Length: 174
View 1 (cartoon, rainbow, N blue to C red):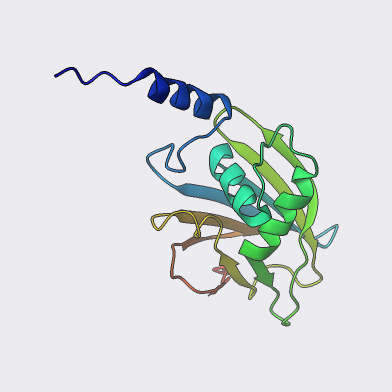
View 2: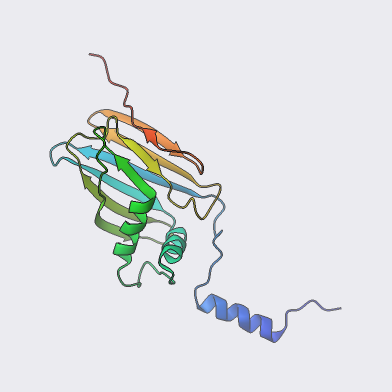
């Protein structure tokens, strides 16, 4: 018995590929990297996030109910910042939620960089952070957040099921 696919099956697969349909699990690991730095002069937290483009398109599509392509979907910036506001939360040590503002996006073949910022008068030390980006897509997602304020640095790692974490910089003794 010959196991070649029928012409109809081949046409169906070609149709799916022409629509840009991709499996959600297009790569073997699920990770994001974010860097948050407090800009003392401008009194704001500046955040850069490196994500996989196909994961971001899938997450934005699920949250908005439409097919999203980063390079040609109208208002993709508004969709992205709305998604980040739902998934990346920062509350300063005084209990004030930081409101993420869109700065920009760089799309590359295998990664996308998102840039956001949030006004803050007290910085990152003692802030509470939650990073749940793509947790709705992958149960093995790992999000690494590198934080910097002045000469102090720390790293927080988030996995599905993790709750918020408090930023605690190791203070240098002089």
